[in-house]
Image 1 (spheres, rainbow, N blue to C red):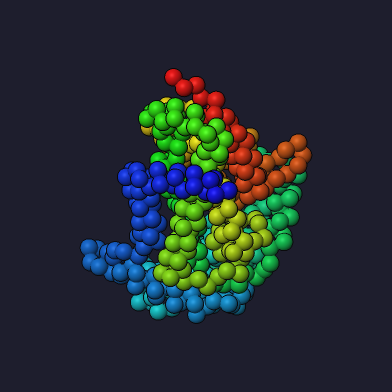
Image 2 (cartoon, rainbow, N blue to C red; image 1 turned 90 degrees about the vertical axis):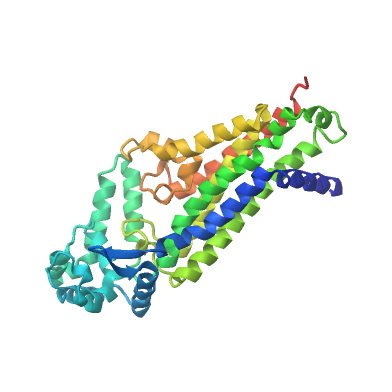
Length: 402
């Protein structure tokens, strides 16, 4: 065991001796710190004149949301929101009016939820004209829209029935909470997955390919531990550095998002993040699931990287291939109507890190077994990544020295 840990330590030293790896890791940390801060810098302008600082606007809206936090989004709160917006004059830029700032803005978070149920089609007059019947039917309208969207999909009838049943299990009325911190965290988990995967490609590409290019493979494969312990130590190093770096970035993002925006809504319904999600989850449930999918998507990238590294003689070639595999799917849109192709594209690492894929309403139908995306994706990543490791191990062990 001591010998193995010594070999692992040696592999870590080799990674951290490369300037490119150090720069990539530092850049990843800086980007993770900076991402949650980007949207609060700057100022909104009206007709060329400064109107409101973004940070001050966030603090003000957060204060208004905290004042409503814990209240049920029921007929009373929805009616208050309508009445508040009814105080606003029907002018082109009503958001800058004193009446909006005084009466309606404190309810803007509730208005966003209300408007999202109507597919963002409500303008100021539409809110003013909401009847008591419309307000009473709020949750039924939401459910009908979700069910209609699901039924219009190309998935099987069994999958549609399952998703609609899940939506029926969602507790109503929703309890309002300020979600700014978790809105930012969800966005940053996606960014972290992509950043971490790309940086891993840079750090892990020379794991085996670097030994070929420097001809160190001749020494390693003829040494006492070259064909067993050292290869295992390399693989352990690859996956431990990925896990540690990913968890470091997640911890940084969590602290940044929560300290800047607030952390008021662990137990709030996931529908405050996305009104039409059909899954009966809390925001805490969704964060943990999404982080796990992003983590395992990065794990899959690490497995692919070391596998290709065991076959290629140049680390540069490994980085190019992994980068194409990581970024190319982000530029391709596969409609949900093409279910099989959509499912296949969902299994690519970058798509495993996307919120709209993880909680998609296009489950995997495996010969009548309906598997939800947020179950299928991590299971596939574990199985596929684990299956690659023996090939990477044998790829370097059986390499012909020449």
